[in-house]
Length: 179
Image 1 (cartoon, helix red, strand yellow):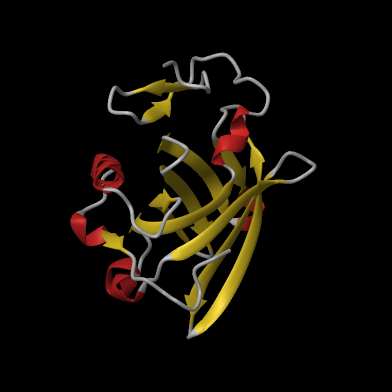
Image 2: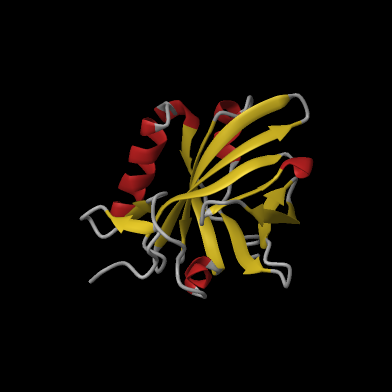
């Protein structure tokens, strides 16, 4: 079966990757990525990530579109034993699955691979305070990722230059994991 979104092409493994040469997707197809997700694994070039990765917990994320057609990312994570909600609105770029908000330090938010119903691999390029770095995150619709999704996360992370020390599978957090 052909992929629903013409900007995505099949890799033959059931996942899809960006195909920048495609015409625009039919109206409404972008909505497949919206809704509730869990972030189950992260690879990061952030300065203190390797030291702090053992303390990182699963995050809940809710993706919605605003009336202005910007992507709203609402995340929920534990910080100092409290649940911290964070919302950011990102403006769509020319490419179908690329968003940004440089004024908030989000230089790029790009969906690298997804099958929409189970997982998404997301690359974010950030510039916060004096530090510029990238992260790759594994989004999952459930609290437990499939082996296939974890394998794709590892493949993308390594392919983008992240060492195994810069990758972490996040811990369950019963208090704060829903956006």
